[in-house]
Amino acid sequence: MKELTTAEEEIMQVLWELNTAFVKDIITRLPEPKPAYNI
Image (cartoon, rainbow, N blue to C red; front, side, top):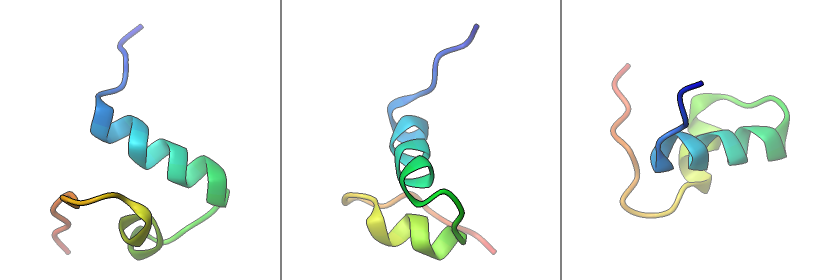
């Protein structure tokens, strides 16, 4: 099984905490530097 990268794990931690969320909700809770998000 492939392990998550640090960035992926940070995103998943926020998502698990929120249960459901929009991308903007996750991005605002991530530490700096925030990952790029392209619409």
